Length: 314
Length: 229
Image (cartoon, rainbow over all chains, first blue to last red; front, top):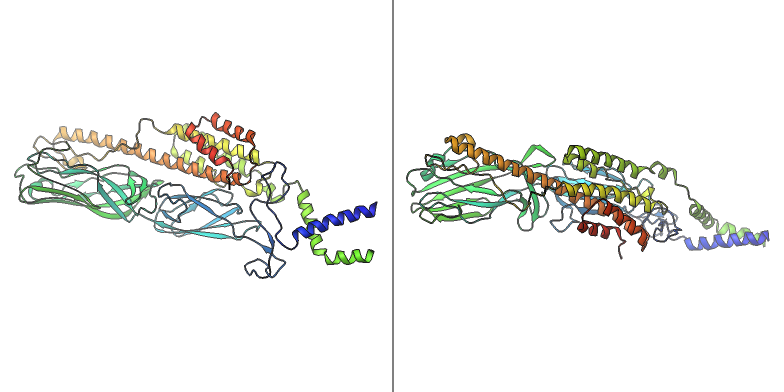
């Protein structure tokens, strides 16, 4: 009886040994049944090295096949629609998770951060300036090989103004205005974690607008939040820009210009104390000797009318 | 017979050792020391997040709400998950996320329409006939009545900016919370028991009790149910 029991045990061991057979040993814990029988962490596979696999730790047979740690990456912003992209905007957030890693580290040249060095999921928050961030997932138990994903971080390269209204004008007065929407390029990333502003500037004017020469353009659109990305345009600033020439008294029909060069800046919404330069935009109103009026702003915003045209917009 | 058995044992010693280790592993019900150290990872995250959420209830500062979401980062420790605790841990997670998301939903300003447009105003035409451009410094307006009106308009504009900034920041926290919750539940969806309707009912009950909107509950329930692939 005792001998039979020994043989039964040996038979069981042989069966188990045959199952492993020098091939992959299943270490996936089976949570999908009510009574799980397997062990260890989900989705990791550790087994013996095939002799021909040089990437296998302890290769040449007898070692373990250790897969790379997985990183699932999803941008928090849902526009642009490619949420798996690795090109992200300054301040942008990316949710990272792994099915086999338990540890995270980051190497960056722009101040990007992770909100946790362990566990899952974690969030990558891009820094304030153009740069890169390399995030490495690893496992403290060595069940996966460290794997690194690198992100390129873009800062706004342009402020574009796009006409959003008809022309505003008073009949027989040399004035012209329009509303424009403001977008931050490039449109391949999201800048919705930023604030935007136009800096102080000085009007340069002559002719019909001579009374406005030297006027200070206020720090306009102070700390305006930036919203979602629009393909083909960029991330849309939450306020519209009201571009209006104003008017002076005196001769209303003469060759005239009114120009203001406005530096634009962005800041992280989480730290609006530090502002970074984007570009300088130009707002320009012109009038020719026949009283034809034109107003433009960088990015293509433009309207036209003439002094004699009927009042519109107001 | 005995010599044959010994020969077989020597030849298969390597496999036998593996098999014995596998048997020991299968038979073990205790949490490993490493797992024991991390056994309270989830609870520590939830407690810290709850504290931030409580602070938010008093302060109404979005920074506290932001912290409540951020502190849930890394809350799932793969080493901590076992078949025995998976259901309970998911309920703890969903319960905390439900409270955060409920708070987010009630924090939106119902009087603010994010589609509304506003812009920096221009001063009114002055009594001398001059009409200054938009967004000039108020000191440039010489007509005191026009300047007062302009300053009022500028103040209104600043309030609109503040409302828009608040909305955008809250919206970003909202997107972040949902993204984090989605990623968290994906880990569970891959490994959780399938077709356990009582568990789904319990999770849905947690969401309902938190007062989350129906539309969002549908989205979250989609995160909870195992993927078909």
